[in-house]
Length: 291
Image (tube, rainbow, N blue to C red; front, top):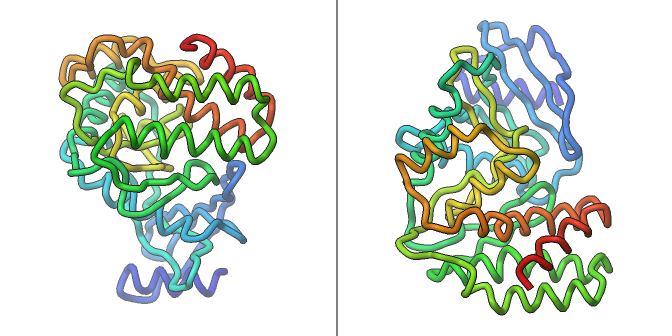
């Protein structure tokens, strides 16, 4: 891989660049990561996977570039390069040195997220499918946000779990009932397609050395902005001042406190599909609350 990295770096910098040091900095359940120190003094972050899903890193690069265009949005690592192969096995990114959040980090983060969400489009979805974790995320364009969220988020995950034998019949049937009454539970008045990060749990944002909010590892699409906010509350939540500041600059419709569980049902179903039956009780609890 080192020879290939040299080729990508040469293309990115317009001249040969040597790798002075390579440091493993761990990884998650999908990819491994490296930190490269280069002869020109730069440091570069590398995500790699020996057998990634089709176009996995190319889709991530697309999302990072798009999020980076948001006016007043959070900081996003710049894409340095991808290898020229059918299914790239790694992605080179700007290395952002982490720092300590300062006293106004959460307010700045919420306003940056609102800036991201102000980027809009004529449809819900994306120009191609991408991934949520290692699960395919269907982004078929729709003009109706209810249709998009019901069919390409909740029902897609439901059918995947059904095929894998992860949904008991009783839960499956009640989930059908929930999907059939979704129009009664969602307040979509005034909402427009918003550019989402798509997987905004606590492991996917941090403060850089200057305290600037940064986001990475996206599963982006144009969707309902409450989905991003809800995800920040799925595994714990940010301080209340984060949500208050967001509401000041981009107010939500009444009833978000109830709807957030419906948005997070998408991620709970995905975790059921990725990690198994330990997430079934959480899925059942949300379904039973609304049916």
